[in-house]
Image 1 (spheres, one colour):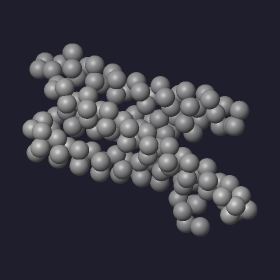
Image 2 (tube, helix red, strand yellow; image 1 turned 120 degrees about the vertical axis):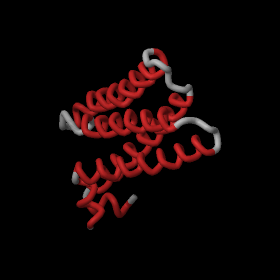
Image 3 (cartoon, helix red, strand yellow; image 1 turned 90 degrees about the vertical axis):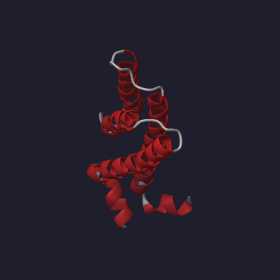
Image 4 (tube, helix red, strand yellow; image 1 turned 30 degrees about the horizontal axis):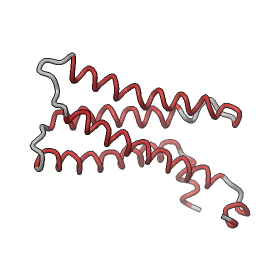
Length: 139
């Protein structure tokens, strides 16, 4: 019963998404810095960009409400989730002096995918928790 209540709260889902992205980012950053000798700067910038885009996309996917607007919610999520990392990557590589390392792109791709998978799994769990008891017992 407690998992049903937790998935209904937008705040708890946002905290869980943030924790997932932060943990994966920490592991990826440590591997990148100590194994491949990349700097911390691209990892931190990618973390901030992907964390912001993941959380914004999750919130944007909640509105407008209604089953008939599901495609609109999905479109808004895709735009928010893709635009923020893209703009940050272009800015970081082409418009900063000195430019970021190319490892920024790899961090962005990894954290983008982690945020996407975590968001989809949380959304599916929330939808499953909202189903009536009889339907979840059959599945």
